[in-house]
Picture (spheres, one colour):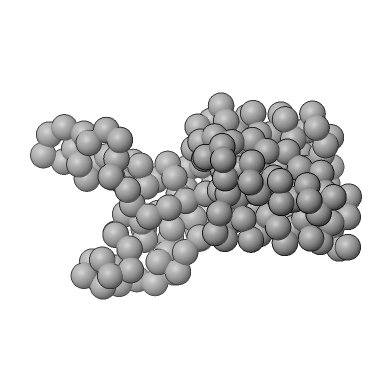
Length: 178
């Protein structure tokens, strides 16, 4: 087992790519901290990991919130005593914002803000929060999951077929930050 004794945090680990990454890390011997927005998906993945006889900590909640980021790090350190790997999988396509905004630019501002929070800000904050632990112990790995939409320059018309301009631009920022 290549990752025996290692502790990994995976955000957006409740389904899809995040779930697959989480299970692969556990199969390779890592103990895993599972974060996902929904409690039921977080618990389901944690149960799969425990069935592999791996240690697992399930922390559901919105990782775009700084207080959740701090909670994930504190509970990880308190439970496992270390962090070795951070996989930032959080992100999603543009969604209708919870608060639509006001004025002639309100909707577009709200869309950009929501997309930024989900696709770049949360990842940057997770990196900043975990960095002191990695620096103190002298090693650590960070994997940031982006999107092909952030790799190619294209006209707005082309991007609309792949992803909205806000999503593509912010994913490009994530590629650059990484």
